[in-house]
Image (cartoon, rainbow, N blue to C red):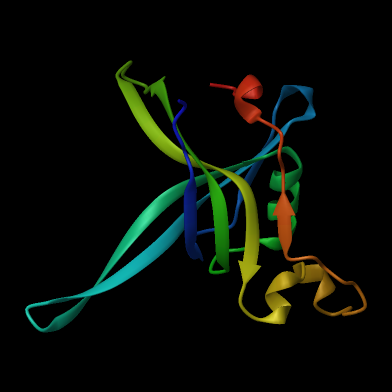
Length: 141
């Protein structure tokens, strides 16, 4: 029996997506996503925020670069990937990322429009995007 690697997050973008174009024309976008939980501790309400590294590939990265900006609320489905690299001092480091398989923009109707389309409301924009290609063969790391 194989395992399940599924992540579902709802949170706010910590900054605009950073978009790169790799050899072969493959597009990758990444950004931090903040999720927050609240709980009571000794009668006081406490909020705890977690930061997640989100990575999107190909067409999904292109759509994210057009419609997502810092502060937007999004629903993301994906899977966890851990990769390693050497820093400048040749020390091996590990980073865990959420490789997004799809996302949905949540919030006001204006959040579903690209910034240039807010003035021209004649464009209809779908709010769910999916990229089913497996990026594992094109990882640049």
